[in-house]
Length: 408
Image 1: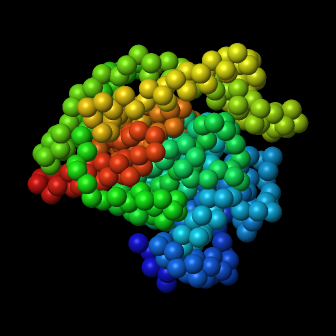
Image 2: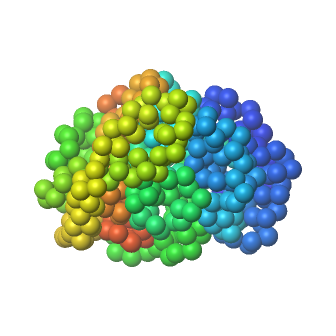
């Protein structure tokens, strides 16, 4: 963990090295950082001055907030987002704003992937994932509407945690789809994630003791087949967990999971068309073609389609607990594959959308690699409200991987 006296070094490091990665869009000067540090230490919070990056989709008083769009260049909010306040109350020192794709959709940022040169860092929380992967900050805040925490964490080889919907506060977040938008966090280890997410949330998530969870792995999915890299990652996780003495069971996903996956499109589209209605009506020429086209298509999602999507989502949440009959947590790939080559795309949220709509906690555990040796994460999924279980299972997997590496 960064000691308080390291904050000046953090700022110097960002100034010296972030030209490689472009993970920050705004950083405090020395005086602003000192004010952040003094406030953090005065709280006595568990983070004790840890340097934190905040995704530029959240309002901040002391730093500009552009939401990844030229429409809001230089915008200076008059209040801090609730998650920024929570980070500070926990003792975190906000050092800067990390890049976001335009309004947290798909138009790529200029951020590069520190652990996969020439490949996308993912999105929409590109800067938060890259800043942690590059070692610029130990903790960063992001959001997930489809796969915007878990996917970039998988691509960049870091821990990404999307708690249950609403478990971390969203006021002060520029919404994209309000029944999906979920605040998440990035760290370098599961242990850090458990400790720091507990401090920020004020909930007992750092439950390091208890019976070893039973892990389930699904090998067939209703949206697309496992890629070769996804299969490699899951096979490695199974070997490592079994070698550590954990029980791993093969499971079959019920057909309703596919219905939930499809429902995500209607729910997100209907809400996005309304959340960004002013931007589309008055600033369409300043939107990227990919977002402008999406919003035009999303406006065609009618009320009955949205109502049906929400009905399927609610029904799925009612059935979600039964998905864990005989297991405690489910393992899937964190992303479809290794990070796609080039920077024209942030990749697909295929392996995250259903779980985001179901509102359960999801954790990317890094350490696996795909067929080309690039980072490939394994996603740990737990029932709604079971953050402590999700993190405990992630710690078991992380430790099993470390033990396997030590034996090599």
